Image 1 (spheres, rainbow, N blue to C red):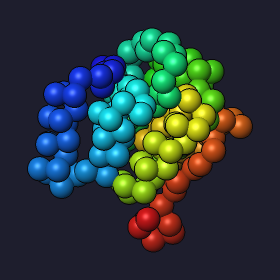
Image 2 (cartoon, rainbow, N blue to C red; image 1 turned 135 degrees about the horizontal axis):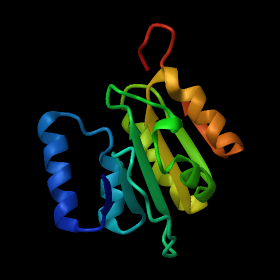
Image 3 (cartoon, helix red, strand yellow; image 1 turned 180 degrees about the vertical axis):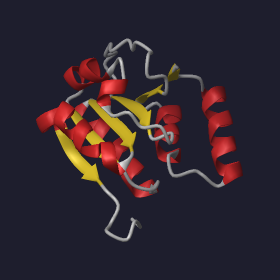
Length: 147
């Protein structure tokens, strides 16, 4: 599925669930979208096509390749188009950290079109190869597996 988070009510519901289950590292993305500083799009369906328009406001596209069945870019119909569309990318292959999502919001504000790929550590290099020099930050777990 592909979601464009453009409804304040919808964003409030997502934030409520995130906070309720204690999994709110991504909250900065949703607060920024709710406040109107960025447009936020979420891709969670590997077969979904994505409308890569740019409406004049900074836009962050999040690809969620971290669902326990990571496929790398080869498994995402939108991967090549996302790589061509973005001006910069973050490949995030570690446990959720609010600071990384704050960096993603700030980066989106600076470069207008940011791709954030959440993936597994074993797929990070494949995403990096697909995105090439557009990768501005790559986050991997430390040797012990912690952030």
